[in-house]
Image (cartoon, rainbow, N blue to C red; front, side, top):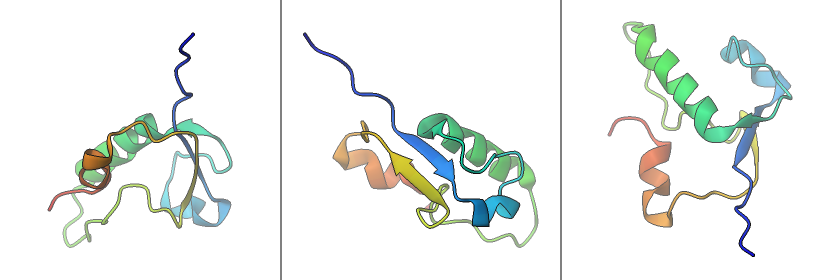
Length: 83
């Protein structure tokens, strides 16, 4: 019997909570859903001169668990903003 792996999850580290208003620290979120939320917030922000992050969920700011179900060929391109 085939069982699907649980979705990849992410949680915000408490020491970075001030950088992500509306994201509760130490709460596990579906990583893809959280990434979409953070990307939408970044794009709506429209702050002039704001530096574009290299990754929408910086591994220093977030902890991850579970399988990364994105094919290896797309992992880097999906994890970055712009280019």
